[in-house]
Image (cartoon, rainbow, N blue to C red; front, side, top):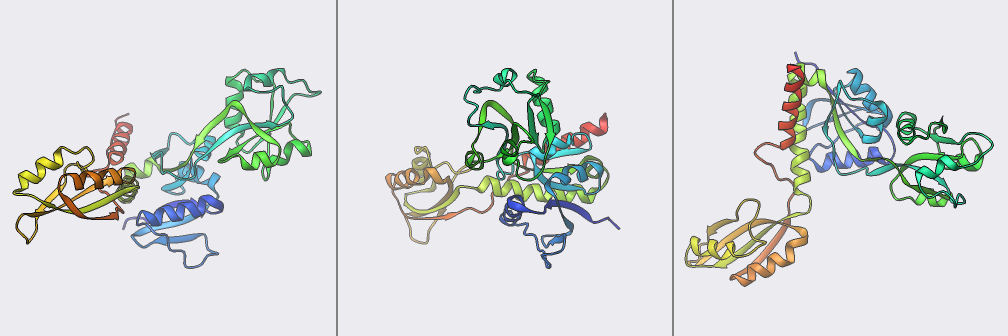
Length: 329
């Protein structure tokens, strides 16, 4: 009997909420009967057990093989240096966008760029407080800032300079509001990493357990179908025409009426009338309606598209190639 496939999801904060909402939008709603439990199920994937973990623990668990799959931020994946047994399956889920930046006090008016930190005069070496010690140390070393001490810290890092256990910080920000409220600002050239939610998996499990690969590809199918459909609308309209070729020729002259590959054209019960339907991006809707009217169309109806499934998602192909390449090595 195949083992249960285990997937780790973030257990707290904005990342948990956004992940659950994202999966639900993809048709992979997570059902958590008891909100106090750290496990759940995905009814659409009955062989999958969901385990909730701290975001920073997820790449470590996937790397160790304690779970088979996971969703986390690129920031925690990079900090864990989880490459090797942990494989990035999808690098851009489209939510959880943020940046890891160096942020200095506003009153350091002589400091504008990262390189200026080398000239900052203090009684002791500069100290930077962060949760991302590996990424920050590497970033500073690459810029020749070897004398800056990296101080491990948790909690509200923004208070570190005012409290006095660090001179500046390196932390995650999405809007910069929290930094500004604490009299801090991101220094120019101080972006260490741009991050968003990613989908990862244990390489060995994907190679040796067909059930893990099958679940992964099913999840990729729905994720890709949902992401491809974002901002897309299905348009239905009626058109006068003497033949299907006549309608097709007129549609072909319009820039916004090509659809995904080509519009569907079908005869209506009334002679001389045809039904057309095609997919159009939201920001092109008005222009598409104008073009439909210009070639004899009317009765235009629009509805949002939930999913667009391809023949085979490109990332499924890329995953297969990545796994095959490792087996050959």
